[in-house]
Amino acid sequence: MGTGALDEILINPVATCKSLKVDCLKEVEEHRWWMPVISPNSRTALPLWIIALIVFGVLAILGITIGLLVHFLAIENRTYYYQGSFKVVDIPYNSNYEKETSEETNQLSKILETKMVDAFDSSSIYRQYINSQVITLVPDTNSVTAQIWLVFKSSKSRKESTRRSIESILQQMLRNQSGSVTTDPNSLRLVETSKVNAEKIINNRCGRRARMSATYDRVKGGSSAQEGEWPWQASLRKNGRHYCGASLISDRYLVTAAHCFKKSQNPNNYTVSFGTRVTPPYMEHYVKKIIIHEAYNPKEYHDDVALVLLTENVLFNNDVHRVCLPEASQIFPPGEGVVVTGWGALFHDGQYPVVLQKAPVKIIDTNTCNSVEAYNGLVWDTMLCAGYMEGNIDACQGDSGGPLVHPNSRNIWYLVGIVSWGTECGKISKPGVYMRVTSYRNWIASKTGL
Image (cartoon, rainbow, N blue to C red; front, side, top):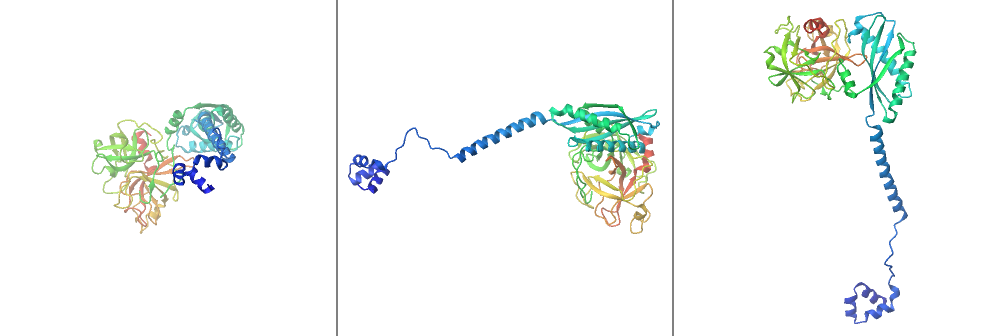
């Protein structure tokens, strides 16, 4: 039998042997050298590159697992909060340092905050530094005690050494007497505090924003706000529906526009809610009292200011707390950048948003706003214009009573204006007109004690 026949036998032995009528066993025996010898214990060996790949994969998985364990065991809860205090000496007693919005408080706080930022930014732990602020100033006979708040990040294993470094850097800063203030290094006190307590400290101060976006984007021409970005913004709701905007100025009082109550001054018809979404209402409160400015005339534009007293205190958190009221003497000049927020129509007679809108505008000189092509003398000194003479970005229907705010050099936000009136929304030469809060600061104080 030739090799071809043998191949047939090996492939299909029974059928082939019958068809060829041969002794298969004999044939196979004679040509055994054609068949491979297979040991029952033999195994096919894997190539070295596959073995190396498997080993590398196992090591990589092991490395990632160990890395994650180290991360969660050593780096979790890596943000740490501190409270501290130190004295600024050779300052005669001045009660204005007790006022968180006074010019004296802002000036001294700015100096001290700049010194802290410079000290930490030039230190060996600059990568761990997140924030530092002056919280309050306490005046004494010949000194002012600055109470401070700091945030750092650190691994658990280095937490104590980081705290010592912070204390050492602050000590060095206080020993360095260059600049306009003299500080006492021996007066420094520093303790760690919890996140809850740290947030409570910040949220009890006016005009701070625990959360914020990197930019203001394009109310008409506006864009959606993030949670907690404008924590003082409130929705004044009439019979359960958004009706006007308002600004939280304490844990019980809000300021809004008087014209929001043209149809009804019954407190039972109104509620107030907060947050960024107008529905469903968030932290809804009932209204106890509505205080309309005595000189307000519904047929005219002036003195369009009202206060709302709630039945219960608002519990401040990251997303809801008060804006700062400016001093009566504070000046916000033309050209200054400000922000208007609200749930008003996106354009004249247009649809209303569910999410709070924000829009950056600029204060416009009153003479320009009173020009013939603009409002032709209707803007009083107790009012201010904000927006753009070329139009587009503006407050709109439903924004009435809401806030126009401005950040100072410490990034603390002040209530500059109250949305009042205008011609349509975003119209050329017809910017929004607001009640000037500084003009009504004393009136607000007389009604609220704030």
